Length: 215
Image (cartoon, one colour):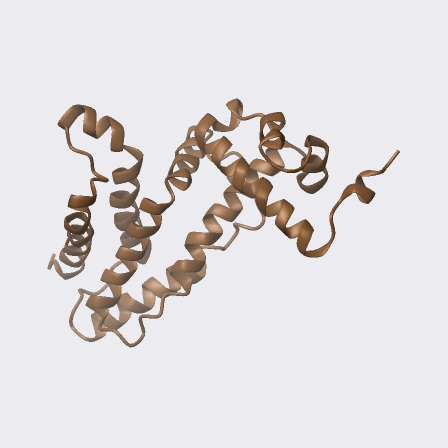
């Protein structure tokens, strides 16, 4: 009888298999929630087995945490890698807001996962060691933009970068998470492509207005 170790692919094949499992699991957890998703169904939609999923991740909860970790790592890496040092603070903050706008629109599964984990009061997220401090470099990028803006007289002093992050995220998450209920109530699809440019600009305008308001 072959052992789990013998069945496990090596090198790039292992990375590819692990990535495929995470791709399928991301959609399953986002679509059915943590309680509703089944490892058997995830295995059936990949080129591997339930046994191998347990070999790679240890269990359903560990797989779910790995899905969350990858989802958050993608957006944090994009934020951290944003090259805005050559831009004015105003243009830099707009680009950061637009990056979040684009990411959240393109990754609705991420928004669903965040919503699901909030239902669980982040009980799985807090068990991740990977996510500890993950947001710090991205917050530092935002802080540097705000400090440059204050020094240049473009922004007011003393703005909390996490407040700005919350403001940007609130708009972007709401637009995707509440798409269907909003459309049912107001007969307006917030992801209508004809309104995309309007909402993208609107987000930047709101953030800039907050940063330039005098209290």
